[in-house]
Amino acid sequence: MNAGISGIIRRVFRKKIKLGFTLFLSGLVCLMFFGTTVSAQLTAGVAKVNITNPKVRGNLTDSMYVKALVMKSGNTSAVIITVDAVAIGGIGSVGNDYFTAVRSQVNEELGIEPQNVLINASHLHGAGYNVCEDVEARTLQAVMQARQNMVPVNAGAGSGYEDRITENHILKLKNGKGWAIRHANPLPPDEEIESVGPIDPEIGILRLDKKNGETLAIVYNFTGHPYQSITEETGGYPGFASKLIEKNISDGTIALFIQGFCGDVIPILYKDVHSVRDQEPLGTMLGLSALEAIRKIKPVKTRELNVISEVVKFPRKTDYVERIAAMETEQEELLRSLRGTSLNFKTFLPLYIKYNIFEEYPSYYSHRYLHEKDLGRNDLEKLDEENRRNIAKYLRNIHAMEKLARLQYNIDLAKDRKIENESAGESTMDVEIQAMKVGDFVLVTFPAEVSVQVGLNIKQKSPYSNTFVAGYTNGYIHYAPTADQFGSGAYQDHSCLLGSEWQRIY
Image (cartoon, rainbow, N blue to C red):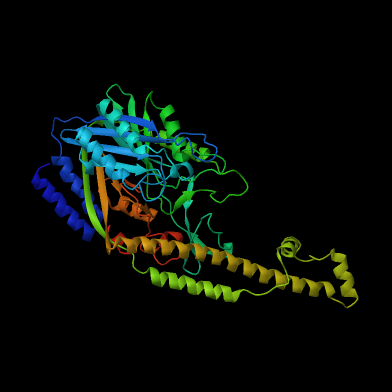
């Protein structure tokens, strides 16, 4: 790429800060036109290496992988790496130096510019927190194998649809606050819930076929936390979906899952207590929906392979003290709301069941109530009144306790993020934003757990119809909620290092 085009891209990026991500993406037009020679032909190679930790806890029934797709067109080379891990640094066993080390080694071994290497974590929980100790070496192994097996390919892009397996993470309450669906805290009473947020059901797909028509690789992008089953350790729904895709395309096809902006998107039935929370049915549904879309894509010869990568300064969150103080005040109010009652749990539970099932005559058969009425007495009715008062009081205490537990968790979380931001010693953080275009396929990244609405906005504003978004990419900086979610009281707001202005800048 010549200096003139680099200058154009830099100017486009500076405009993006003011006008939004659309102009950043439009910089790809310059790259598309000037970035490769007319005679160039896209080539690609793909490989995967097992990164399962044999010491992982629980019943391990599946393998975790690092997968690498190496592409080249003219003077441009790029690498997509996907890792079955919870994050690229920050949390879990993938170290903070992993990202930089892998990029450096790929550059040293293959001469590929570090900014042209994209590394995405599936955000797999459970086993994803504890991959093998030599994941860095195995990642390089996957990249080297992919590089050695490169062949000319045709590329095609498209999208599928799957809306049955995810739901939004945040409940919008009637009091204007947000409440995250988490195992760390109970859900609010049904009558306090106003609405739920959006999901992103789109499956973004890049299909790369060899010249003989066999499919070399599928890159597919979807949005949703891959939480684990309580009974076994697996690759989560992405692992099951990838296996299904690989078995039903061509021999040797490798499917690379790219996690989207799922900061507030989780699997359905996440808190189900009546059946095993199994990821395989979800992965099967996603895989089948992806296959349906994959088979409709007709790859064509292309030379388009372009990457833009820029580091942007984003403000750090600064209002932790005020937020923590507000939550502590709410805690004190809830504590003062607690009232004494003659019931304990042993007496409350049978009364609660009885008075909710037999509302009219809870204390005895109806004839006893009628008999008392004929005698001019209402002893059972008075007993029912007293019991109902105690039940209501006990329930209010329970709801207060649930809110107290949630508040304490969020306070502790906010204190941790406050310490993390203060220890940085800077009011801003450097964040890499990357955009990659392969044929008609465009992928935009951010290294955080980004709320889904941000991705929906980017897709809607992009000049490219096949634009998709990847969170958990090239690092990890915790949550990135929308501007509206800041101050909502939801988990994402408190587990955030970014200032509320981040979305406007992005």
